[in-house]
Length: 340
Image 1 (cartoon, rainbow, N blue to C red):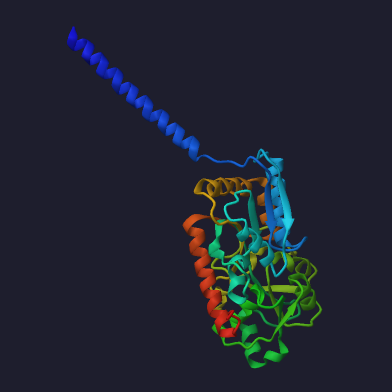
Image 2 (image 1 turned 120 degrees about the vertical axis):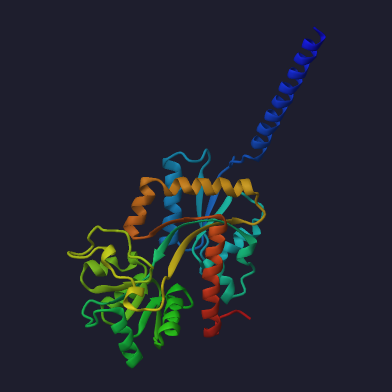
């Protein structure tokens, strides 16, 4: 009888211990969980109307339409200094989990060329939600059948085939400098106010080529004024819907398949938070953005702009930043652009 009572007491004690452990575990999970309880601000590292602004407002509309947050999101444009204004604002908001910034690789490339009061390492990388491919565009009347043929002509007479692009010391000029380094060309680079303006100049025959993402030259391609010579990607683009009478994005050959030495050159669409936030706070927004990218609206946005579907976070995002920044830094150093 005594043995039976002792056995029952021992069993009760074990059960109580298990229950305590479970409750403690549940309390720990609850303590670690986090979600915003007031409005979230989406800072845009660009002016109104451009691609970065459009992405931020798409994210805002998807969150609202699909009820992904219990609070509202507010978009604020802070594009001064090519986005430096926005990134400095995020740096100064250290520890604030109610601010995110939507930008590009300007988050980590701008501090390489100018003293801006912040380093990207003072921010918290959340995710890359998509990437832009870059295409080498030529005039539709150009006699060159491949990019390699065109680059040979540029080597022979650089003054005859100037390269146009968006702004100075930006992604278009960086790619042009990379072409000069890898292919031995000596492109004369002419900066314009936007990629759209560079496309218009190419369509009018005022420049020999431009490096541009697909969306900014699609109108001129449809009109038969320009043609895509090659895409700077390891693989062809995935979109098979015809853009012209006989070509889709997937029909554009890769530059590397034509013998160009640049295997891949892309432009990330990034989201960062201030430094000093918790892992749980960062993870909340990682999960939120993942849900955003899985919606029909976001997929339609990718196809409309011929963007590369990619979602990078954590170590994968950090590795992407390092590789991209290292390549750019080498180019900037050779060009004499690095800040002193």
